[in-house]
Image 1 (cartoon, rainbow, N blue to C red):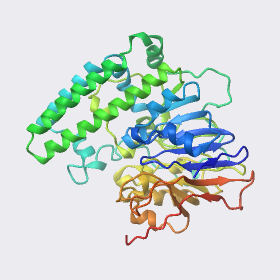
Image 2: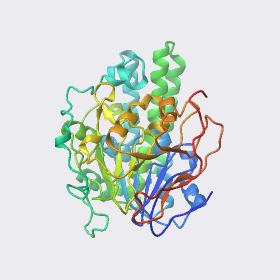
Image 3: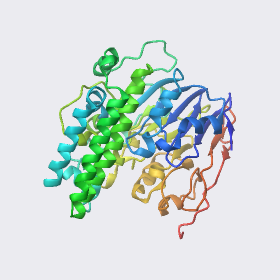
Image 4: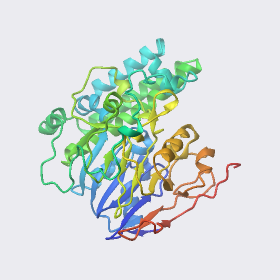
Length: 435
C-alpha cells in the first residue's frame, strides 16, 4: 500500500517495518517518531510507501532500543537538508561528547564497567536484565516522586497553547545546550567513522571473549546485555554525529527532570508536547556509563499532539507504561488537560502485556478512538491490548498472526471531525485472546 498524504486534514501512519516507526502529518507538517531497526532502512520505506513526503519537520527518537533508534542515523545522512529538528533523550547527554570525540576511550571504560559488574552485579544491572523478580520497578519506585495531581490541579481542557515550548513557525534560531554547540564548533575534532567502527569492533571482541569464559546464567545474561549496549552506543554516536555533520538543530528531553518536578516542559507549542520529560540543557554528569545507556522501556519519551476541532489528537506512547512509581501506578497523564475529543494512541510497547497498566491510565484520561500498533514479536500483542473492544485496533505488523507488515493508520479528512468518523487504513487486528 502507498499513501498520499493530504494537503488538508491530518494523518497518522504506522510504517510497515519490523521495528517501530510512526509518521504524523499535522497542520501540513511531517513528524517521524522513531526509525525502526537499522535493517528496516526507513528512508526506503518512506520513499516506497508514502508519496509526497519530501521534508520532515521533526524527527524523534523516544529511547535507545534498537527497534526504535537503529534506522535513524542512516535516515539523517540520506535526508540531508530535509530534516528540520531532531529530538533526543536527555539521558544521552552524558555519553555523546566522549562517544563523538574519543570512542576508543569510551568503549574501554564501558568494558571495564562490565568486568566490575561481572564480579559484583549492581542493583541497576539486576533491574534492567530482569535477574531478580520485581527488581525492574524498584529503582525510582516513587520515594522521590512528586505527589500525583488531584483533579482540581489539572489544567482545564483547551489550554494546550499555554506554557513553555517552541513554535515551529518561529524564525528564531533554536538555542542548543552549550556542550552540544561545542561539538558543532569543533567538528574537525570528532573521531571519523573508521576510528569509531574499529573501536566498536574491538569492544565487541572483548565482550564476546569474556562471554565464552563465563559459566553462570547471570554472568552470561550480563554479557549479552552489554553487547546490546554496544549496539545502542553505535546508534547514539551515529545519530549525534549525523546531526552535527548535517547541521540539524537538536533538542534534548530529560525523563529524570520530569520525575523530580512532575511538570513536563518544552516541545512545540500547541503542536507536539512532551508528556513525561523536561526539555533541558543540563551539562553531562559523572556517573557510570551504562547508567546512561540502559534501554529502560519505562523511561521512553512520550509525546502528545493535542486534539482540537481541526486537528487529530495523537499520543505517542513508545514503550512507556505511561506511569512510574510502584507498579507504574502513578500516571503521567493527569498532568495534562483532559481532552474532550477522542484521541488516537500508539500501542504501548507494541501491545506488550508487560505494559497493561498503560491502558488503564489511557482510559481514565481520554476517550481512545484508535489504538495503532506496529513492531513487536510473536508474543505481542498481549491479552490486554486484544481486549480493548471500545476502540478500533489497527496493526501494521502482526507476527503473532503470521502477517507481513502493512502500512496502516488513520486519516482525518475534515477540518471539523467530531463526531464524524476517522478513515482507517490498513489492517484491523483480528487476533483473539485465545491465540
